Length: 141
Image (cartoon, rainbow, N blue to C red; front, side):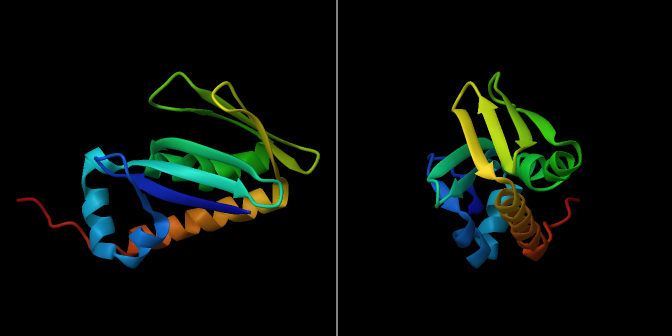
């Protein structure tokens, strides 16, 4: 199972996680531009071919799914995510060894719980490593 993030450029193209990690200068320039923090978090289970592609601002996606949201899901067994750009609410529950997504936008999806937790935690760690590797923005005068 894999989870990875990408940024959406002004022209609508995706700039993938590997490109961002390989080019810290590009990543820093993009992340410093508030108009280009829109991103996608893709969650894919190759064994079952179940996928979910979630869009929002990239830092919010990582927080909601890979950091605080993941901790809440582990602790409480349920999580609701309200997306900023539409009236979509994604309900996530943990039951029977699975993480279940329920959304009007893409229906229902289920992922193996342990694989989901590991993939999302690793994605959050990669995002944090990317952010900590970026050069500090110049101080404004």
